[in-house]
Every structure is written in structure tokens, then in C-alpha cells.
Length: 123
Image (cartoon, rainbow, N blue to C red; front, side, top):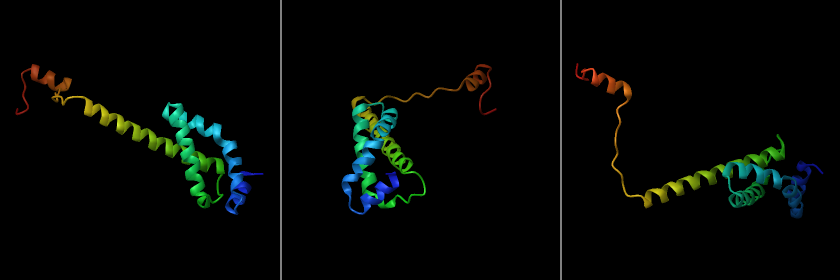
């Protein structure tokens, strides 16, 4: 049975057939999510989220492209959102744990060279 046929049957009420799609793409989605996130646990969570999102929006699959591409797009999007969320959380934790630092501004080399030669910006 093709993916499109399975999707049609699931939309008609044969919800148990959704497991067929999960079985077909679970390993592929996990590998993609793990490559994006670098963490097995996070990847598993995102794969679960992907299947939930795909099921919730299954009627939006129009069949113009492959179901596998549609599902993979959702997985990549979910993994990217998770990665961004993790970065923001990490940055917040880092900023909270460090005391504020003074900002130092460095002059670029070209400006330093000009100043060494005795020229100033006002000339």
C-alpha cells in the first residue's frame, strides 16, 4: 500500500494504519533529527512531536509531492525549532550564571596603524 493510500485510509477512519507510516519513516526521521540536534533523547522527542504534528495536520497533505518529503519537512522544522530553543535557553543560563563584564572595544588594525603614524581622525 502506498503512503498516499495509507493517508487516505487514515483520513477515512482507519487510524491504526498510521502505525504503518510510523514504521516506514521512524529510523529516517530519527537520523535526521539526531544530525540536527546532536542528541538521541532530543531526537526521539522531536520525532514523536513530528508524528503528532503530521497526524494533526494530515488533511493538509495535498499529495502533490511525496508523503515522505512532507513528513521530513515537518521533522526538520521541529528539530530546528528545538535547536533554536535550546540555544536561547543555554544563552539565558550562561548570562544568568556570569557576572556582567565590561565591554572592551578594539580598534581595527588599520586605525591603529594610522594613529601610530601620527594622523588623527580630525585631519
